[in-house]
Image (cartoon, rainbow, N blue to C red; front, side, top):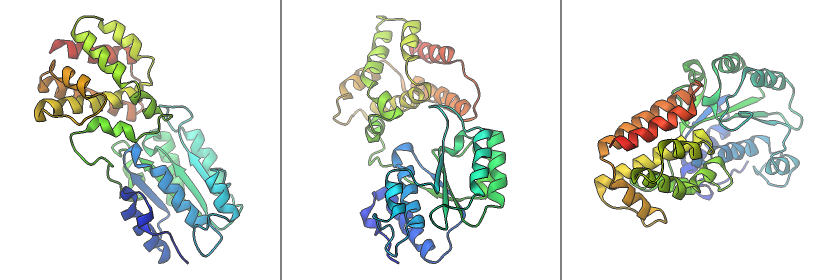
Length: 307
């Protein structure tokens, strides 16, 4: 049996790919893995690479030419099931897990293994997580679970205890270029789309500080964005503003001039308070707590005006 060399993979994947190859060759693969890392770490892609090894019918895995490999490349393999929220920013519901339970106890169609990918795992509500737990406790021998999460604070401890956890590093090479993280995302992804609006968001904040627009006006415009991704971008922006004030230098990017100008309006203490508030909002979203988006945005914008 021959497996791909780790040097052929993304650098953030190389360590864990070597680990996967080692435990697979020794037939010590756990029934469930929890991959933890940022969205731009492409952990779904890493999951499909593992699935290609598990499901390939040839000695050299993945061969890229057998029926299983071709179906995987087209994301149409009948023995790979990916579970995700039904809509952007939504949750994974118990009905989805119940459907999964039926699939889990059905024999694989093309080989001896079935792979189930749950992404993002932190979006399961309590009922869904408890239903999954029963499956994780006594899974069929043919089943291999891959759970993917950006953070695990809202994942049930009982789920965590039944998965081997692999943590993937961020791709960014510097700790001061927070906004550059957005450049890693596909422009067609939800985060790629919101990042393309960065210039407009920066201009809104500058106009707000210069009293060229109102809190209600900016909040109304921002409600047209996907709320979860807007909060993510605002967190990166606040972190970048803090670094700009403290380090007094910026990378050469198209948005650098706007970020520098905006940073001069705020004291770092104000920005740290904003990070705290953004963290509170994010925690509520991860716990599937209903949020009045209009009030949340107006509150954030009023905080900017208070500095």
